[in-house]
Length: 523
Image (cartoon, rainbow, N blue to C red; front, side):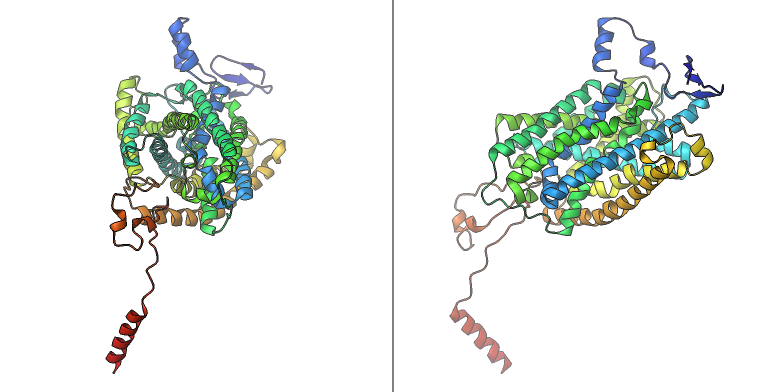
């Protein structure tokens, strides 16, 4: 590439014209001035650099799942928990790279046709449509929207679960109502271009929370009689594995984050760098909490429930609440875009009109969070059934099919690097990703996570008022209840199932009467 023209056309050595993707001047930049207001807005609001994309990827990736990873370690065991984090972190970075390559390929082709994206946000289903046709578009749209819908649901559930550990005067369902209304304010954030300060603050908050979990667990030490028996059951093992699959499958918004960048080509290694940083948070925190509490985590899917209440824990809860609000916006914003395009308001310049039009998207999210408040198990279910296809299988297959012909490989905007073996190596890696995730993630993981999810419904029921809350205090006169030893002999663990004491053994007189009556009937 020798030079760059104003319109984004680049002349190469052969004289042919190609288009440097994304080399246009954004609308906001056209109207910039040197006032203090515009400078402050640019500092906090308008982000399109590689650093902004890194903060967005890292902040969006870790989110509330940080609090459920110790729960996954109790299901997997320490060694498997660490290995699955490293393995799925690498696999997630690879498929995010594939998505970025397909985005650049699609956008370059469209810009060669003089398409203008200054008032249009490109999304993953449009990339599939442009490269592979409407059937791929429909499949990608269905999986992506469903995943983002439940991703938003999980954030609301996490908000209610966390705030309960500061204020338990209200049950978790009531807190879900409150935070549903709070998170609805994300309709006023136009796009990922405007998440600069939020992404930065979100990563600071999760960094604090992760290191609080690690340090507080080490200071607390191991509980009396701690046991680390995992893995014990295949259902629990694959449930934990799919939760980690979900952890590093947060790149369903990769295309939208790339589109917000001034130079989308710089995204290729950003997700990998974000994953490496996230591993410095998830590995120490999950390992430390599991070391301290062991099998107790099997009935405490939120790690904060086991740590004693201190100002530091309250700070972690508050920071995670704010971060979950941010992550709700990350997951919901692509849904807002799809809805805007459906009703014809995506290119509207009025922020208030767009915000009002977006509100119907929040209602089903709010409702589903009240129906399925199963913090922890829902992560695994979403990971196995939705994340497995949305961010692993579909991108790998789409890359293989897009570049299956020799002509497509020769004209590719971004050919694979030599490090992975060029096209042959890329094809082999993609085939492995598809096979592994289809069998282990969707197959075994889907069976295990849905078995666990149905078990939660059977135990707690739908619309449960307070999922995994401690039992209420014993009422006065509990010893007068008709149970041997009184109500004190009934234990109520955090999994919500009451364990009644065994019935007393029958007396010899009772046995004689029963035996005599039975014998008389036979005569």
